[in-house]
Every structure is written in C-alpha cells, then in structure tokens.
Image 1 (cartoon, rainbow, N blue to C red):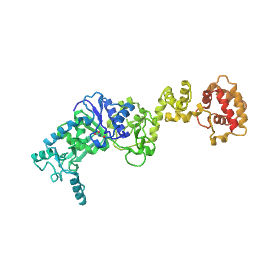
Image 2 (cartoon, protein in one colour):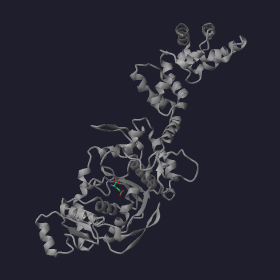
Image 3 (tube, protein in one colour):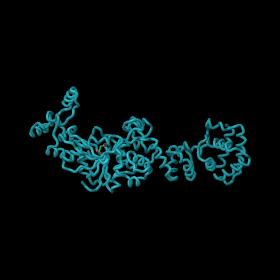
Length: 501
Ligand code: GLU
C-alpha cells in the first residue's frame, strides 16, 4: 500500500446523490485534505440495470457546487484512470480467473430456476437458503466437475457466474477506525458472485480490484457497507494484497422516529435530502441549491452529522473543518437529521454574507417584479432585514413595503387605529413635512421630541405610523423604513391610511 493517503468517493450512478452520500464524500474530502492526500471520484457503474442517465453529471455538479471537487476523476488528473468502471470492464475478468486458478473462486452454472427450487425446498424445512460451504459441493459448480468439463461448458456458451470460495471455520478479527474491533464468522457468509458471464464484474470484485489498483489507503463509506467488509478483506487476502484501512460512517436517521433517512423523506417532510434539484417525469425532488441554501452551510451542517471536535463549536469554514477533522472522533451511533438546525446554519451563513452579495442575490427577484431600485438602497435594505431571514427567497416577503405601498392592512393591527389617530397622523404629517435632513436618526429625534413636548404616548403614534407604512406591525426599525422610502412616499402612505382606515 502506498504511504500517501488516497481516499475515494465511489458512488453508483443510480439516481440523484442522497445527502448521506454527500456526507460520505465530504468526510473523504476532509480526511484527504487533512492528511495532504488525494480525494478521488470513481463511478461504480457496472450494474447496467440500475444505471440512470444524468446521475454521473449530477454527482459531479453537486460536488462542484459544494466546493469539494475530486483531485482525480474522469478528465481530471487521470493518474489511475479510467475512473468509470464500465470503461475498465476488460480488466476484471483476468482477476476473477486468477482467483479461480488460486482456488479462491469457482464457476457456478446453476440456473435461476434451479436455485429457486432449492431455496424453496430449504425454506420449507425452515432454513434460510445461503449459497456457501454447506451446500456448494452439491450445487452445479466447477468444484465437482473436471477442468475439462468446466472448460467445455463455458465454451458451449452456458451461463455461469464466478463465486468467491469463502474459507470455512474461520473467525475474522477485523478493525474499523470508527467501530473498533469487529469479529465475523466466515461460515455465516455466502459465496458472493464476483463475475457474470455477460462479462461484467459485480460491485465486490470491481471495488476491490480498483481500490487496489488506485492505491486506496482508506475506505471511508456508509455503514450499509459494513456487512461487505469481511468479504472485501478476504478478497484482498486471496489476491495477496494489503487491505486498506476501513471506516464505516454512521447512518443518517430520520428527524422523528427511527430508521434511516430515505430518499423519499425529503419532499414528504418538507426539507431537501438532495444537494441539487433532480427532475424526472414524475416531478422534481428538491435540492439544497434551489431551495436557497449556501453550499458552506450545507457542508457545515453535514460535517456535524456524526462528527464533532469535542468542543461546543458549531460554525466551521471548510478550511477549519479540514484542520479539525479526525476520523477517530466520528461516532458510530446514527446521527439524527434536524431540519431546523439545517435552516439555522443557513441563517448563520446568510448573516456572514457581504451585503453587496445579498443584494445581488435579491436583485433578480425584484427584477422579475419590475421593481427598480438603486444598488445603495438595496444594500441598505438587505442589511436591515437579514437578521430574521433564513433564505434570500424570504427577502421579498420581509421587505415588500420598501418597494410598494401596502394594499391592505393586517386585520389585527388595525385595532391600534383609534378615533383620535387620524388627527394625530395629520399632525405627524406636518412634523415630517418640515424635516430637511431626512435621515433615520434625525427623523427619530424630531418625531420623539414632538411626542414628548405634546405628551403623546409612544403607542399612539408608533403603531399606527408603522401600520400606515407597512400594512402590518412587522419590519425593521421604523425610522430606517421612513428614510429609505423617503418623505413624499411616507406622507402619501399616511394620508392613504387616514382615508382608508
Ligand atoms: N458503489 C458503492 C456505493 O454506491 C460504493 C461503496 C464503497 O464505497 O465501497 O456506495
């Protein structure tokens, strides 16, 4: 094994990348960068039945959007290419044959029907059928016929698979960085198919051969692959290769109840479980990008699903994550997905954005509504509203009154509009009309002085004033709104409220 840390993300292109897959990619990325290693992407597309067009492009685009693109992959530093397994097809057969020659694998000719019949028979006797040491000598395999007969049957074009000959009566003592020492009994394993007569390897063979050839130092992947670990270790041994170091990441669990977060949970529970939108004929599965999440917020959130640095710290830049990340601090218990926390992270990152960037992100929403606004005002507006926003997409609802006079007044807020309010508002108009330096603090001082001098209670003015300008009792500091919409518009809105309410 090479000394250098080389880790891979090895998804199968069977659909959009689930958020759990993104977390696996992220942990591999962090581990690689932390150790000055290489993070590569390999596409495991040997199962043609499950291949979904567009999935590979989706994976690449998602990693790029998140800022964790691989150092090596298709078209990028192809040191150990090709990185798409379907393009490495011709290479696997020889490895399967090597295992046959060394006595670690065998040909099995059983038809699907024959296997079904045996399965039924065993099930009737209350047993679960498993293809392994206990019955492999009774099944239709090269273990019980001559080399010549085997060669003849293959030459005749008979369907076959190559199965691994799992060693018998052995206890495997394995180690996983996250799970510690684990024991497996080989007698409980089945003789997995490694290669099929259609010329395609299965996941197990291709994965091991490629991890060896691509000099993978650590296999960091989801817990669902833990049951494959003994077979994989046995395969490395059968080939006479050093096995990489393993780390199986905890599952990501549903926000409520038990069970693993599934691809369907997102749209059902109202939050995305995919990095980007995924469109099919059945509709759109929503993605973090299109929902308005910042990629940094998604990464930060995912990093803490199963890992922490032992402190209370929650906000990390990617660079800080790289510096703090430690596989030894990944826990093995499932990590609960918390959609509210997810939004909280986005808010934190929204607060960190430059006002000019937030304004730039908001501008297209305004342009769609044909609203003209200067850059300076827009920057000012976003600075006033961002405190309460999780997403830029909420900006319009939080700030529409800056751009348009209210067309109606919130029912419950009109309670503050009393019989003496119109007269007071009329007076307020005169006060405002005389202000020349129309800036927030100055307007505030003058209006408040007027109230004090005339012994007018705050509530009598401030709430109806806000209602006139906003149509509700929401919004940022009132005098900031007054300054931004300007004297003329402010007076116009108060006059309208007087006649309407
Ligand atoms: N192709 C497997 C997947 O879809 C890779 C598992 C592994 O990392 O070994 O996740």
